[in-house]
Amino acid sequence: MSGSDAPLLLAGAAEFRAYPARWWMVGALSLVALMQGGVWNTWSPIAPAMAQLFGWGDGTLALLANWGPISYCLAVFPNSWAMDERGLRPAVLAAAGLVFGGCLARCFRTDAGSATTLIHAGQFLNGLAGPVAMSAAPVLSAAWFPAHERRTATALVESMNMLGVAISFVAGPYLVPPVAQADLPPGSPGSKAAPSAAQLAVLGRQTLLYMRGSAAVAALALAMVVVYFPSRPPSPPAPSAGVERVDFRAGVQRLLRHRQFWVITLAYGVCTGVYGGWNGFIAPNLEAALGHDRAESEAGWLGFWSSLAGVVAMPALGFAADRTGWSLRRMLLVIMACAGIMVLWFALLCLDTVALPLRTWSLYTSCILGGALVFGSIPLFFEASVECTYPIAEGVTTGIMTLVLTCAFSFFYLLPTNSLLVAALTSLLVIIGRRSTTSRASSSCSCRWSSPASSGATGPWWPPAA
Image (cartoon, rainbow, N blue to C red; front, side, top):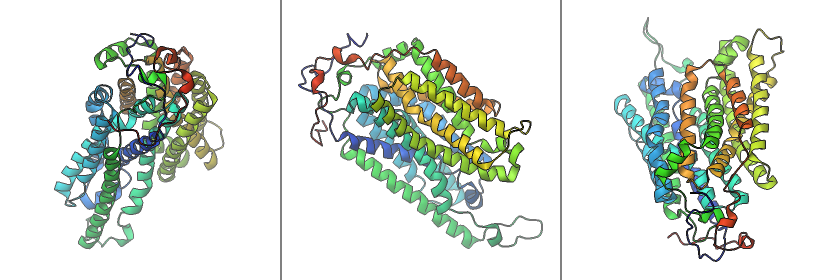
């Protein structure tokens, strides 16, 4: 089935309409994505405080972080099926409920045994919402936005998940600081100093305040979805939005044989997945040049600012792609080439065998620009994939892409720590081989709703939710 002979929905619709309420949809999904990312990254930034309060070690913290990719792999195909076959509303509603449930599970206990069990359960529930938080944006933009706004809408939602992660790096240590070493009561001879009961009580109250604040924001996100979040508008925003998508099972089978899709997915997964893993592993790369203590200090700020740069770059690059009409292939080619240069610069700065002057500004410049370019390319990869696979449904397309990303993120730890450069160059070479053919962008002639002249019409603010 191709874009020209696919069945059409609502073929008698009078005109194309872009409803202003689409921005409410972006806001609601963005808040769900922001909270999902922030909840996933809750515990790593406050690890010193949790070691004092609960006695957690590295193994517990690692498992809490790993619940994200574990539950993601379990939920990716059910969530993709729900988005494609049942509609966007039930999928996003379930995701918002899972995020809220994951937050709520952490709000009641501060004793080590029961609190740790509930926190593990909360992390698992939150991870089940990951596929929707990370891959629903192209589904929303395809259903609600005209073609010249889709990349911007996708980029806005995608940036929120990363913004949630970045906020947790700052909010966590600020709200739940560990008891300072100087304030610890002296321990008995031969034992390590530990917080007093009163200090632990204060730490427990601070932790519950942080957890309940997160639950309140998650409840707001859930309420926004409950109040208004229809799967699609009454009238389509563009011709391609009215073409019925290939059913889920057939779509998976076609994707497995779709060469261009796997070219884009390999480039996306290798580069962004490995970079995401490396972004939390910067300190060992810096130790040879800066020493252990300074490397640990600088690594946290480098990771934070590079993630924040990606948050800004995503909507900026998406807006540029919409307004300029540049080829996605050419944009990604330039972005990956520049990212490779930034990564090479950073790698040379970290090698003590290279006579390149080490300056703090050069470390930050190369790392932040690299993060902006790599993370900023994510919505462009998504849009490129759904365009080349059209009329296969967007949910299964982006679901498989993010599954590859998750696998690349996990396998990073089996690779050499300088593999980031290899990832950037691999993505560059893969994109060079991608043909710049898309079918969704040229599908307007296949839809019988109305003439393209009416595609700019604006509908009422709140179209019916039915």
